[in-house]
Image (cartoon, rainbow, N blue to C red):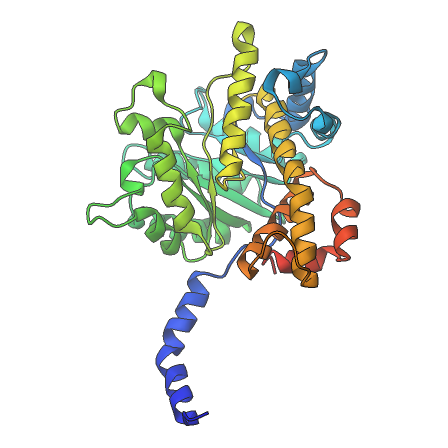
Length: 390
């Protein structure tokens, strides 16, 4: 050791500010589960028992149908899917008072929706109000005020989805608005930003606006949600070719993934508007299962669902994905923890990714704790720690 201690101390001094800033901007993976989907329902259609209704409709859609054979996925996961549809068909619900809303009395509809959710909300829920663009700003804020007022004192976090965000000024304005709404109504609010305009991906200065928007939210951003159809339409993609796997959509989502990495926010896939109903039902199921599987393989673990008949393929594709990943993840993580020689030499970052697969499999119901924690001789807290969820 030839360097004096003063050199080490000088490095610490020089880098202290950037160390602190990086830790604040990139706190890591958030604790707690991520829902596998967000169900969007127009405000005038939200009523008590909605989730159970969607579950019953989803089960009816697959009654007497060999869904795994139709979509080409593992039939062994079907009992888990049916159980999920019977017990927790909707993990995350967003009351839609924006593009999907066609009601005649928005005040009454958002109030009724809030009261319905107060009586029995799913694990995650919130509202998408109209954008902060001048033409819709006051209407959107009024709906937020009414909706959250009817939820005053709710103990959990309510998610507010901001659509058609174009710049960081709108994000900072939303942060201020949410703080005022929290103070007024005694609710805790998280912010989601919809990436559905070109300006939300690439700004006029050539910078990635999505990344700047996440950090402009000051730790309040829970996710970037891709708006498949607004975004592709804004880039001139013909309606027949607008889809979550169109190259321009996949580019935007790749930017979103980089923007949220390590920040505590999550990138979320969009929706498929090809609904599994009528004569095209089976083709729509195959398409939806394909899109969900494709998103999972690219690291997007949450997407939008628009119809009860999309729930069976959402869970079938999700469960098949995670159960297919279980054997290798368990073997490789066990070898990593025990420093056992194997066919793959995993690094700490890969071990974290392996643990994350197992955590997500447990969170969504694709696997049980006994089959995951037992072979690893870990408890859930230790597995969460390996996955970086602390």
